Length: 420
Image (cartoon, rainbow, N blue to C red; front, side, top):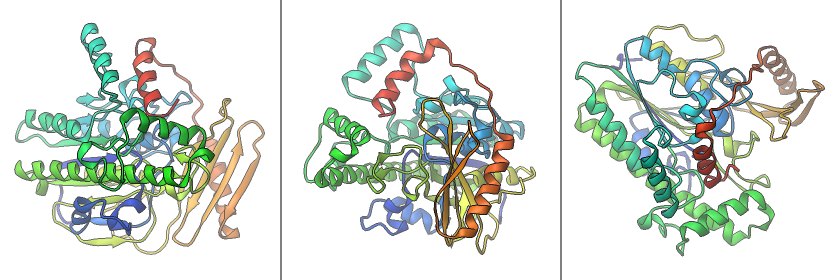
């Protein structure tokens, strides 16, 4: 690390897979802003999320802990986030997003001085009801990147000139249903798709993947890529506003994603609870106050992001983690996990990645049996089994419910986003 940053900024995009960015070799120019950002950042070629879906990936991203520690059986936050640690170190802390799964309903406002999760149950009752009606009328499922930028910049402007801050912006635009704004709707697609039709197609891809034709699959990809281009533009506008406030060169900026999205490569769409590359390999850029332009091939995890922040404030880093600011060379093993989709929550999926290979397995919590899937090298299965046995010893089984007051709003948003 060349200079100690005054501020720490984490920008994450929901469901943004690395291999659909042009700076990761994609055939379309979907990310001109991030392509330029990469030229003054450390870009990680082999970065993996700790899990494949928001309910486990974001808790891991914010805590630096595997999901089996970060959340309980009800997906409620079960350990402190980096916001708490940075707040205790003297940072003002702000979080801005619109994903119900990581809202205050699940405890994710912990440690944040300002936490805007775009849910209305905290507002006046009549205001909340009016907002819900308006959202349904305009088929609105989340706050657009432009809105997230406005809210977070307004918060930054409210701070004192001498106050260091930690900011987390989480953008939902690349999450389905893919409904790029008007000027992006036909950027790659040869026809427009009305909002209700986009939602219907996306939901059918989740529920009945075999029904999706080649043409419909390509349309989903075209719309997804257009959302990436839109999100990329507004990340650029946010960076410009930081520059205008003389904050860009005084901040450590991390840009990443919580997970990716699939388009039928393994027989499914969206991001169910598997651990294939399409839904776990994510973009990751780290820009220091003094610019760097290098690519790191060593595998890293989104868990390493919190370790990097902890290094900046002088805290110890777990022996399994690394700081993304260090000179990383050679190979390294990173591990991933996801709860299965069985109703009784019996299945746990695990995977490991190295530069040379990967290995997958499932564990039945009732019987303790471990069943291995694809392993590119037989030696990796032993390493993965050892890791799984270690995670079993620390697995968190506590269960806490959610207040009934927020259920209706949460359910509506999740249904619209295809989670139901």
